[in-house]
Length: 186
Length: 269
Image (cartoon, rainbow over all chains, first blue to last red; front, top):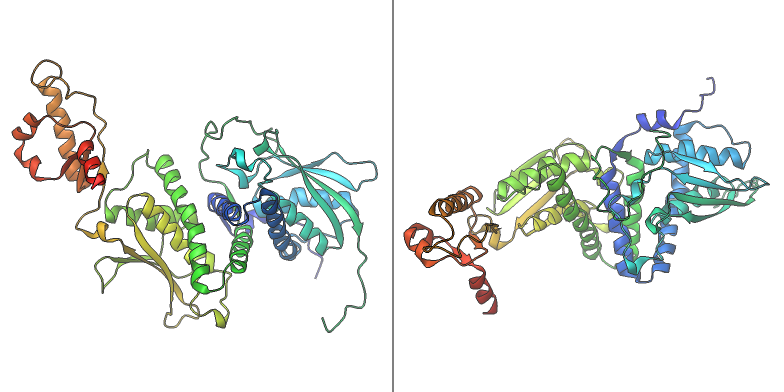
């Protein structure tokens, strides 16, 4: 069988099953509120959201690879583009753009034009330290770790904090070489 | 839309125009998120009942907001005040918005008058969930039960809502039934609805100068109309009515008309 051509984010999104974004938004809101009640400390909530995102990311990458037919990315620049153009579109139905590359091409920004997580949301004074969308950074970190890239993902701009866009900084820490042979007993 | 330009910033979330609700995300994105919700709550509890209660609480928060949103956007700020009205609102409108389809069925319980059931062959949240044997009757539909309870409760119909698996003949997977048991006050014949008419302060000058009889007539006919249309048990009046009028309308006396003063008094007792 001939290799299948990679599909665009739009094409994939048009073909997958979808749900109303409001159900998604409100459910996420319910999660954040539950965490705030349980953990009390905003810092802890940030951590937990990141952890949840990580858990999602390490599973989500499988679906991503299965459905997108993307070829192996040649470099980190390629990876970032694929995340922004295919990844975000495929799961959240929104597109992101990549900018602010540093000189050695290991650090960039992913800027979100639209973010379904934050509809209806306003941060009260008590939650000013909250990274409401921290789950997203966890997802990216988790997914990239599964394809042998250790990254650090941090928020640079957040509209809920009064910035003009959502900007995630993705920094490639190191590329973990794949190890052979895999241990059979694990 | 790509490149439409930067999203406009609003200083206040309320200034932002309400979305049409047509936006979508992939089902897997929701499924992943929901699975995290369940897994996180699993770490916070030590029994199934507790886990279901926590999922229900999360759902309740969603339901209360869905009611607000839908009433505002789709129904021009009108709310259902009748029991069957709100049930069909949940069964069709809410279901259609949240899950993309009307629920499979809405039935009245055969054993108890006050029970209703919404059934779904394959509930969205249960699509990708299999329950381990040792977790018995646990049903992630508790989240949806919570949504239903949130909608009903916020609309003034308190109820106990639970989710159950019901095995179906010839089907591998059981269907999920959301069982709604209304609270006692809802069942006393009609829905308990407080109706607060916002009439202008026309009562001040009754009998002397002030409001013409015509305007008062109009006010009463509106009031009576609402009373019968909404089948409310209690009508709350913003201002104490002059006695004169109640005498003129003796049949109104027999129904339950409370003024704020009465209610405050009742609450004190």
